[in-house]
Figure 1 (cartoon, rainbow, N blue to C red):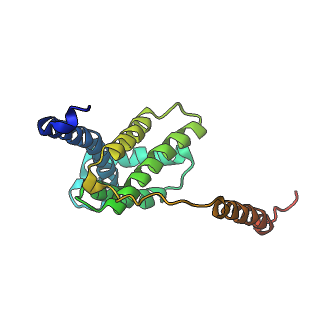
Figure 2 (tube, rainbow, N blue to C red):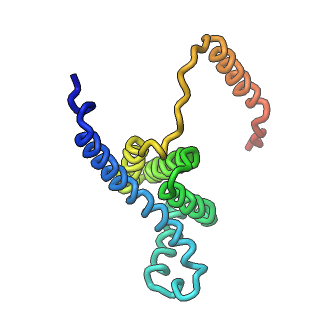
Figure 3 (cartoon, rainbow, N blue to C red):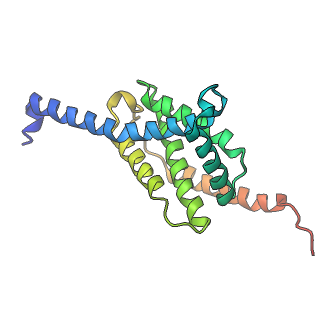
Length: 184
C-alpha cells in the first residue's frame, strides 16, 4: 500500500518540491527568451541603445547570423516570438498557448544546435542545456498549466493507412512542382 497517498502532509511536501523544481527549470528558459527579445528591442529604446553591452551584442548577433548562414533579418522574426514565449510561459493558465510556447522554445534550441553543427562548430552546449530545461519544465508543469487530456479512443488502423497513403501521394505529386534547374 502506498503510504504517501494516505498522508496529506507528504502530498503537500511533494507538491511543493515539484512546484519549486518546476520554477527552477522554467525561469532560466523564460529569462533566456526574454533576454533574447530584449537584445533586439533595446535598439529601439532611447538611452538603452547607447549602452556598450547593447552595441557589443548587436555586433555579436550580426557575426553569428552570418557565420550560421542566416540573413540578418532573421533576428526580427525570431526575437518577437521569444518575447511571446517568455510571456506565455510565465503567465498563469493558458495551457494551449503554453504548449505552443514550449514547442517553439524547443524548436529554437534544437535548431540552434543543428545550425552550429552544420556550420562546423562543436555542440552548442548552452542551447542543449536550454533544450533540456525546456523539456523538464514542460514535464513538471502544474495541472493548471496543462491541457486537459481527452480519454483515448479506439481508432481502427484504416484512418492511419489512409493518412499514410495521402501523404505518400502528396510527396509524389510535389515532385512535379519542383522548379527546373537550368543545365550548365
